[in-house]
Length: 182
Length: 205
Image 1 (cartoon, each protein chain N blue to C red):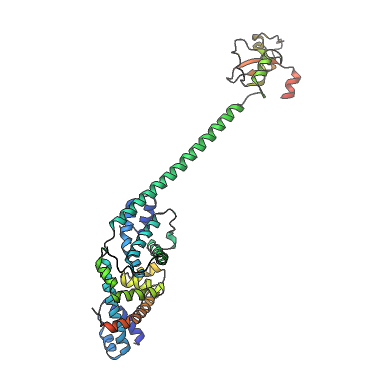
Image 2 (image 1 turned 120 degrees about the vertical axis):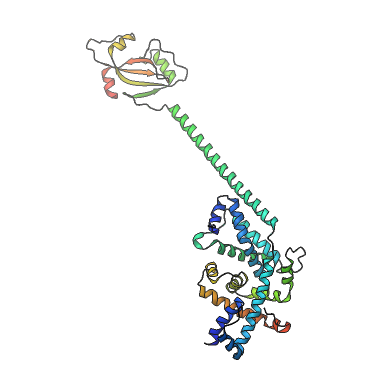
């Protein structure tokens, strides 16, 4: 059976480097994407995902398994770091020259994606988290409810409300540049 | 069903990339508001799909991973060093405490259970005593006391024959034991004996 995040955390706290590496490989990509979707910046997302794990290594890392899952703690840490780092650096890295993932770079530079990220940033954070986790990370309602610490019905209603707000915000852009559909 | 109820289903269909069920399709055909919402939701889902695909193409940085693993190693080695420092310091403190307490006990002369009262007397005065000033008589063939050696005086009762063998003049006609002080060196051997009057002995008992 695959060890849980909490098992890996306990092992890494005892000095097990392989447990730390496994936890990193398991959670770093989604933390990076979360930070990217919240901030719209690849540079900042890389920094945030790295910093979350640096803080997890510290002896004073304040994770308490009794208060919720480790993954929720990591997302919470990422959210706070984004807020702090945004005060110190510009939001967009449109001219990032050494992008390893150019498809994403191109997409971010795309006007409609930039508008979507801008609209996402303006959402209240619990609406934004519902969109990111449910629609961009494709997590189930149950999973998201566990991570956000609220009932499934609340997640669904937040998501529907958030999508309506986003659609309304993006409507002028869609109207001016034609319809994008599957 | 009301538009509000249809909307919930409409959003879920757009999210799943599915066509709405026939009843909802009929409703969309006649309700302009729901038709517009359906188009909005489809556009949004398509946008999300593009972002998901682009984000999935990202490769995590091997350099950053290596940096973190090194940092982890450093943090845990550091932790061990701190732990070891504390352990060694604690062990040193314990050793000092044990040494001091042992030394103190040794100097104070821990009292062993004895049948009679013990009196500590400095070696110099004991030597003087042994010389006769305090009434102590040397035990024959006993090694001399070293300078500064601590001695103890044990008050007890001795058989008259034992005192007589040490050359002491005692009246042992009735065979009763005679009260006496014995001067004992640090090695536990007797160095001198002093016979007591009966009254002195009963005072200290």
